[in-house]
Length: 295
Image (cartoon, rainbow, N blue to C red):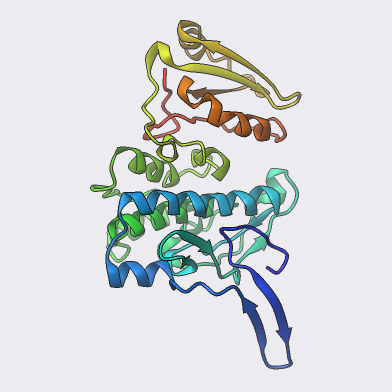
């Protein structure tokens, strides 16, 4: 933890060990935990919750991509506040694990850690899982910070049965709003393959002021070839034609975005071009599910 350096992660300055104890000297966050704040002051307003969600996702993107670490216990109690509610910082790395190599077997993990009510369905079902479990937990944490509750009752027998099957229980997202609700629904995809990584969620329109849903001929279709990092942009009707005749070639994946977002997307494109993908189809538009296309 002492080697981590990100503005949305609590810093550990010194670690002292003795035969009986381990003492960690950490950054002080005067606002306490997000859980305690919501319980004492009520749910956060959208103007506070949205930047908070962004900061937590930025922390996870740093962990997953730059440091190859999965937190495994993301929850409101492990998100600390500083500067009132201006800064959100991820804390408590007791359950964190270094991800192996970039291949699927190296990334897969079987050990079960974390808090049950914030754990992803694949953990409840005893299946192999990877860093996408953190995104499920973030979705629940965003729901809690905005609504003061989870979108389902973890004590309900039907909810427990659904999670034990590796399925998502019925979600009550009333009150989240369209854009934030879309973000949470993508985080709470039961299939981890349909659950977007943090790098994709950071491009969600909820984080762009005044954004609008891209649709029809205003959409763009992009082809990303991971092996060489080349991107072709096809505007308007051509995007619709390409989207309707996907060839499913393993080395080509198409990304849908909207013209107003192009300037914001350029850093993301540069990052995507340096990564390898085996199956993910990126959806950067505001959509209830990544299984749907903007076209």
